[in-house]
Amino acid sequence: MTIRTARDAVTAAALYLRWLGFRDVVQPEDTSGAPYGPGSGFGIELRGPGLVAQVDPTTRPTSLRAVECLWLTGLAASVTSVSFSLAGYEEKARARADRLRLPLFVMDLTGTPQPLNGAADELVARGV
Image 1 (tube, helix red, strand yellow):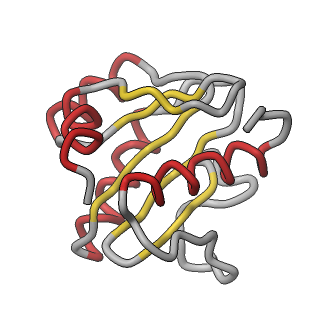
Image 2 (image 1 turned 90 degrees about the vertical axis):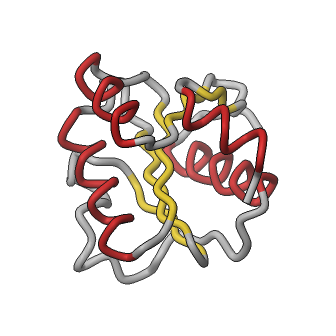
């Protein structure tokens, strides 16, 4: 799926998560309590049973704060956290995600997510 809009990036990430074995992956309608969404600077949230994912469709690398907030959201809900970014990640964000074992994926404009760290490689290898 070619990525032309933020919606395309979210759709590509949702399809990939379903391919990994996560079921019923959706963008929640009510994100009032979530740190994600338009204008948040953290990307767009996807959820499914046992999952919270962040999709950052911006042209800036995903920040350390966004990675930490995603990890805390997953920890609080006792679910797997996964991050997707079009522009990659800040160096500190990548380092923190590695320490937290948070899977990071980078997406190219063809809509193909690529694992960026060991946690993402493990998720791809084992699935859900």
